[in-house]
Image 1 (cartoon, one colour):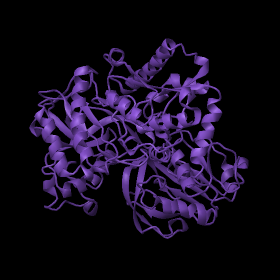
Image 2 (cartoon, helix red, strand yellow):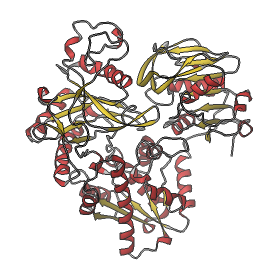
Image 3 (tube, one colour):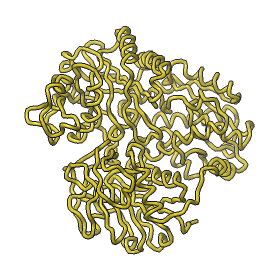
Image 4 (cartoon, helix red, strand yellow):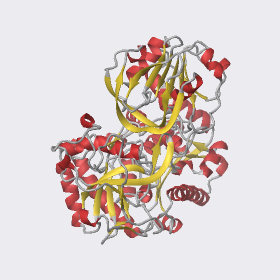
Length: 628
């Protein structure tokens, strides 16, 4: 039911649309998400409207449907990204394409406007766009800039309309919550009418309603999401009505399945069963290299195993629902809303699952939550800290951290041609400027940080750029020394490279290995096989041993370790992908303390099993957390 004290969000397909709604509710105000073409009559009683971002291009694609009468309601409107560009187009502005791309952090200067009350004149915002407003619409004035010839923010004082090219809803926009607070309370005049105190009660009521008199067959990975889901279902339905199955796919971390069984039993989950499916998974994935295909095979096989176990236990399908610990980022990345692009098909969103959801055969109690909210509920339920604070681990396991190739792609690295706007002529991409010297030649003290060329490696990984899926190459830079200056410059260099080169969606630096062998290294044919998974397991164990023991690594939210079939002698290399995040919708690459990093490199190198160790310094966007 619509409230007359509600913020309405029109969904144009952004990966962050749901996150906008969450941010409004965190402020204590009801928000609801509507289709992009919701009628003005349906929205006439709300106190404010937010137009979301989306993967479409206002400049190149047919415009998504909307009711132009929403702009005549006399209600404040805030357009974000696509919504910002759409508003500019509606009021006579112009939208350009591909000339001012920005992905990740950007430094922004703001000018006086009600929505920027208490916002510093210089602030950091999070961008994810390829198009931009190139000409101001009638009645609007520019109120922010990032210095790249696009309109970062605009304002129509007569209509109370605002447009942001950036995303205030993500945590990486430092003053984003202040901006949203200003919009909701000062501009829309909303009153607080929502609290989080009833969130758990609402979830429990939803479980009762959806389950009815049916039991739940729950797939349990042992991670925080499925564990919290297990606890919720048992609390509401009782132990006898919940059957937990952990599938050991053969792609788990070292001794993971045994640890899951032991840990959950100690926490009171004594009805967890384990099914060994290593042989089945390796057979099903034999010869498969394409990431989407791998994910769908993995998800389908989970369902086949559920059917097999239910048949063995003589469970009647009509009496059971399939339970999953799906959270919202899984849904939206899988193209879970009307206009959202599919970034990657999560194992819990393969087509068979989508069909079963439509048939009412799936129950997902925490599907609307984010990782930090799931942890908060786990804490409220009294789960042990060791369970709810674990690093996230993907359902498909190491299967999506073990890159494969059939040798058909161009197999050698190439020097990355071209240079970002503002980079002096004659300077290659490995010698980019810091924020303070952008557009000018580097000083002598800065040049020695990087040496040689920047390479485009013959690998590809999944990314998200401008709310669209990308499947592109990583760039490799080679630091001459790894010091505080280098780490600081990484923050600027990585976004500059991905913003300037469409074929690049990640940036790495060479952490260990013979740099003279880069150009002669090859992308080799390699598939999912036990020998490769065992090597990855061994290295993953080494990395986590040091990370989890170091109190200075608490900032690291997740650390995927990826094996790639690239090299010259061992024909394998390793990528470290440490990230910082709260809800997984946006992430920053994380720095591993130097002393710990040296220990990790030393122990991996002692295995004499890989040619190179790379360090991924990509934010999200443009790179997703996992490589596949």
